[in-house]
Image (cartoon, rainbow, N blue to C red; front, side, top):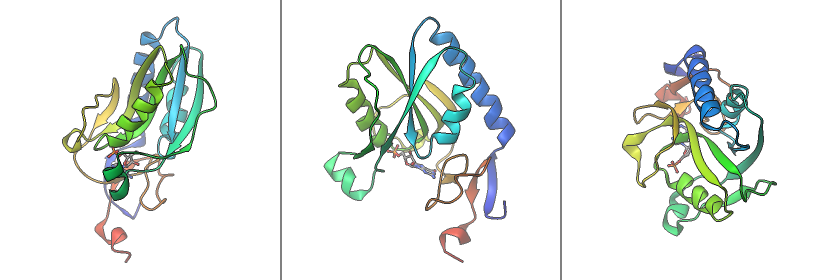
Length: 179
Ligand code: 5GP
């Protein structure tokens, strides 16, 4: 990919880790009815691969939230752009995210989902930038901890581009500069 300055994670590394996460989740939810909630748009490729590595019956749904911009930061609210259709009461819910940065989006989302009285509520994120965290959020399942770099690929975008890349990498500076 000519726009990438560096590849952080190859498709093979991602696939191997997704398989491990799937095995862990399979073991932890034995005998339970699992409900997976993917957060659009970034988590889509990850969720699609992950659910096929979870070897117990599950249901899934998708949710879309507005990203945490300057205005939402002050109001403290993230807007739900698309809600799930299923009831969560009494269910074991696993939220699937692409990346946790400050943690503000997920904190809001988890509070919102908690109010629907699931039996359990856990988080599986592909990527985590722990150095950037502003609120206490610890995902139960975490693919890779990465340094504080802006990454794209495998669902992650820059201005809606690069989501389709099979790898995760860092863009060349000229892409931002529009050259
Ligand atoms: P948080 O509320 O944790 O700060 O924000 C999480 C959201 O910010 C992610 O779901 C993602 O949309 C976006 N984000 C954070 N870091 C990155 C990054 O390195 N690359 C991309 N493409 N999006 C990011």
